[in-house]
Amino acid sequence: MGFLKNQQVKAAIRLLAWQYERNGQPLPERALLERHARQLVDDAHRIARERGGNVLSILKEMVAEMRRR
Image 1 (cartoon, rainbow, N blue to C red):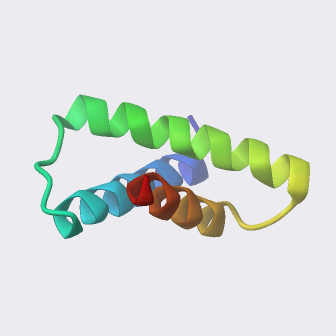
Image 2: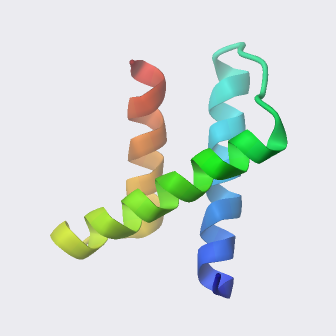
């Protein structure tokens, strides 16, 4: 995995952790959190390719939507 994608995964992990804490939920184990973050980054890249846009902005929107459900 490239440097930029690694940084995006780390940002997604921080966003997910923040959302869990904000909602008063316990954090899942690190491996599960990282797997979820990688999936979010992959989805954000796919959306950015299809519609254009900034991957980090798309990640933020995805995490916010995920927690509203």
